[in-house]
Image (cartoon, rainbow over all chains, first blue to last red; front, side, top):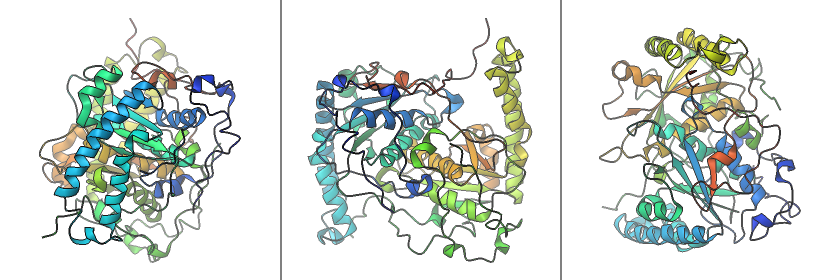
Amino acid sequence: MEHDEPMSDDDRADDGDDDRDDDRDLAATPWPTDTVGLFEGLLSTRAIRRYRDEPVPPEALRAILFAATRAPSGSNRQPFRLVVLTDGPHAAEAKRLIGDAARRTWDAKRRNDGYEQGSGVRDDSPKARMARSMQAYVDDFDRVPALVLPCFVPYRDHPSPYDGASLYPACQNLLLAARALGYGGVITQWQALVDAELRELLAIPEGVLIGGTITLGRPVGGHGPVRRRPMGELVFEESWGEAPAWAVEPPEVTHTQAGPPRPTP
Amino acid sequence: MEHDEPMSDDDRADDGDDDRDDDRDLAATPWPTDTVGLFEGLLSTRAIRRYRDEPVPPEALRAILFAATRAPSGSNRQPFRLVVLTDGPHAAEAKRLIGDAARRTWDAKRRNDGYEQGSGVRDDSPKARMARSMQAYVDDFDRVPALVLPCFVPYRDHPSPYDGASLYPACQNLLLAARALGYGGVITQWQALVDAELRELLAIPEGVLIGGTITLGRPVGGHGPVRRRPMGELVFEESWGEAPAWAVEPPEVTHTQAGPPRPTP
């Protein structure tokens, strides 16, 4: 099931800190060969929050971002822009801004949402594992190998609840493409905590929505089957609330509760 | 590049009009074997608007909808619901409602957006081909094999511009899973034209957003490389507007203009 080998060492031989020193002709570099199937990939692209301390090389960014830009959008307008931040001065400052905000927010959430109560005190509980994973993620945020801010450029007078249909498919393609190449990532909305600061730092125009915070890198650990709610709770047929007869999962599927842990009564 | 073989005839031997007659144990039916790679699939999942006149069998719906529900969402809350409409009485009425609205809208758009002017009068122009494809799509809408209405159940007091991050990744997974299984689909926002009627027909609660109209079926024609804008227009590095040095595409990539055709001056 696991095919998480990253690009070979040969492929990464030219990774310098400054990708402008890269002297190969990227246009002639073929796309990577697939080692994960399309359907399998959809079922096993986990949120990856721990990264090895190594850059995402230019040829990988190229392939991942290209796949992101191939996503569908309303009338094929492609009103999204993807701002990539790796090792430049703006990247360092953006990571610091979001990292600081994330640490403050997580600190409050950990206390308020009861991560330290009930099953949260048991080291092996899902709650405790989630809390450790989030703590490590925010602690190390300033060192994430690559940060991508997906943006939406409005083409209507007023925001529409359907705007996201022309932004988030590209984000999902991006995360899936990372998985295809042996990388991994996760999307949060932490950029919203420092929207004005990021906008000024990166010269993102007024009116453009900064719609997410995506981090990418080589996973510590691997991908694998994702844990979600049972299909029959999420899929209806003919009427709201009616689970289809065919909404049955294989016995090996494991589930999760939705949302953050409930405070223990 | 093309691997569009649908499920084998054996797999589809039990497709009846009423999938509740299906006497196999779906829980024991394995997921389909991949014939398309993950990265390749991201680059070649086209909007499919013409379908063969045959149902999407229950085992295919099961796999496609399962993959959709494996998408990420904020805090893993999964605040989306996917209403599937195939051959029941509500399905027929929903297709008729959306089909009628789409025909009226397309008729006006075709005239107002200049699809019948300029290059639109040349049979082989992209504009003319798009117009023919859309005309056939709306004409035959009431016979689409499967219709899916992706819905968002709010968990905050007010709509947020980030809500779509918990709905549209599932829609993109759905379209990619269809491609993986030899099916195809497309998402529009035509449901918005008959929102109140659909809500009443399908008992969709007040406050729940009906966020799209996805149609699915066996493609007439095939998938293949999608046509989008050049990557360098959509991807920035370090600052807004700065194309990365690595944002170079292979020479075989063909592009499209963004959005609907401009009226000819």
